[in-house]
Image 1 (tube, rainbow, N blue to C red):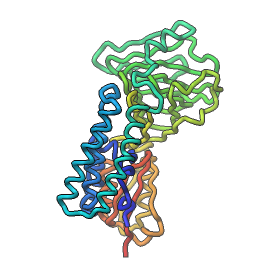
Image 2 (image 1 turned 120 degrees about the vertical axis):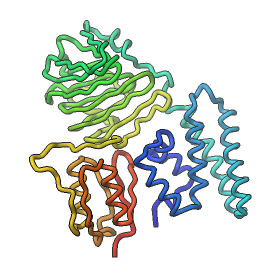
Image 3 (image 1 turned 180 degrees about the horizontal axis):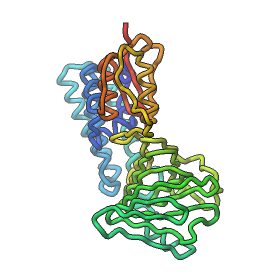
Image 4 (image 1 turned 45 degrees about the horizontal axis):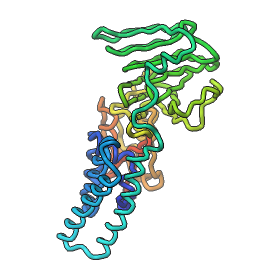
Length: 364
């Protein structure tokens, strides 16, 4: 049985992938959630209710008081109850909805009002970083219409996008750190130096690497880190005390690998790890991977996908051991390939915490 069959209202509300799909309308997941609704129509009302609440909570905290939030939750629940009643469901199910209301008020107020104790305005900005620097910084601002190439003193490269700016110390390596302050969007190709980690400060997020390539997009209230190659550690600026050893990754950091990303917004102060919209191959081998499969075990297919894109793919190998694939894939995007494979073996996939989880009944 599909694991989502057991989902209740709170499960949908706390599912990172479902929330991102509701808020951003990610096309790659349209198939997954639509398939879930068609397989289990009894979950449709639940999904609609969860979606409406998620969109309600997208308002700024200052826009809703506790009483207003409570009223909005009750309104949505009452509408659902009337709908369920019209469909002649039993008293037991109605009681379930009332129980869910209590959960919603607690979860909703916890997410929206408390915000994990973090200010919705955010306390870290490019100007504050620069003004607080103990040494004079060199600033480069891209006022043109094309990307600007910048070479740092350590040999690292930055592709600075229009209207973006970076600042760094001319004496670049200090206290076993290489530090850059960013406003706007930039692509970094960092020269490997284990003894002197590379730090990028962008609003409320700090990105730490040793040697890799990645993109950071920052603007007022939002930071996005997208990994191209290597590994990246991302952490909240508020969690850094300044006393941490440069060569040690804090325990509260989130680790990202190729084709993974994290998005942080000041009004939703939690890092959500996911997969990039259009994953690309992590290497360019001399021989291009062949995605033409002639009756090959699906496990080998998933292994090739994982090796090519660096994205973890989880599945029940015992359940799918009798599934074989006969299909010729060309230059389709990663998620198109994945969708074709899953459709062929009558399985589905979900993106959760930067991984792909495959579920299916198996093959005879």
